[in-house]
Structures are given as structure tokens and as C-alpha cells.
Image: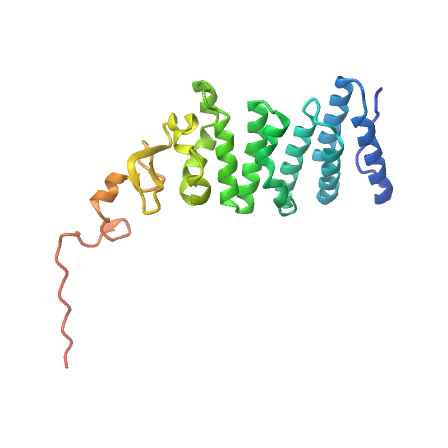
Length: 253
């Protein structure tokens, strides 16, 4: 059975238009052929994601498509990723905040592959960071990196931006960080761009991070032992730390 999709959002009444789409989504969900189901579902997702209709309406239809189609041939995953991306691009993520807090459990529930899990968790982490939820973003990044345990060097290299972001977020989201095993994950441990300084911890027992490039994410243990740097102005030291302070000048009575 082949479904001919109408061009999205023709000038018809909104209620009638939504009914047409919901009827079409139900027909897609009931297709017997896997290939026809996948083609129709993916075409619907692409049309709603890229058309010029109102973003709020398109987001609502994508959410309904996500709720209607079964978890089959990657359609549900593609729908949820499209929902997250459309909401982020149009500043509508606030509507999805409760859903974002449950995304980390989807890979297990849906038995997703490592690659599919990373696609979902990466988009969700970007969305959480856009909302300013550093704890949720850090939790999602860590879940992303856990899928890379035992991966080869080439695959770990592709995840290095996420590893660097998670390493930096280790300090900014202490609640999520203390519950994670981020320093032991292969993607962080084997990355030359983010390394934990052994034996260096701050007052909250959070490992400090160093970078071989000379720009540490936070101060290193060696810098802590050296003490505070002299105050500076315009890039030059005002006074060496060992120089005695000048006595105050007495004012005339």
C-alpha cells in the first residue's frame, strides 16, 4: 500500500488539516510492509521538519507522529530526534523539559544500538545545555560516553568533542559528576584533550582537570602548590609577590 502525502500545510482550516495528518499517521502506523512503513514515516518526519509552516504547529504534529507510530525501523527514534531539533532551533525547548528528563532511559527501553543511542543522547544533551540545565546536560553526556566503552581509537576520536564538554562540565555540575564514573570512561581517559590530574582534588573532592595544550580546564595541582599568581594589570605584574609593600605616604596636617 502506498500513501501519497499531500504537500504539508496547504491553506486549509487548521482543525481539518490536523485531522488529515492524524488520519495519515494512523494509516502509516498500520502499514504491513516494513519498507513502505519506513519510507512513509521518514518522509512525513522530513516534511514536518523542513517545511515553512508555523514551528509550534509543526512541533505539535511531530509529537503526535511520535506518539502514534510504533517503535519500528527507526521511525520513533527519527521522530524524537526531529522533535528535539525543531524545538531547539525555534526556542521551544521549554515545552519539552519534562520529556528531556526521561530521555536517558530511552536507549534501554527501546534496546537501541550504540550508534542510535549516541544520536539521541547527543541531541538531548545539546537541548538540555541550551535550556541552561547543566546537571541534565552532564548526565546525558556521561550516558553518551558510556556507550563507547571498549570502542576502538577511531570511534573514540569522533566522540572527543563530547568528552571535552563532559570534562569541563564535571566541575560545573557537581551533583551529576559525583554520581558518575566519568574519569574512568575510555572516551575521557584516552583523550589527549581532557585528563584528570592524578591526586589533585578540590575542596568538594572533585578531580581537577589539565590539558596538554597548556590551557587547563581548571587549575592543576602544580599550580595550586605554587600559590596564587601576582596581581597583574594589562598583562604585566604590578609588583613581585616577594617585594615588600610600600609604606603609606603621610599626609600633611
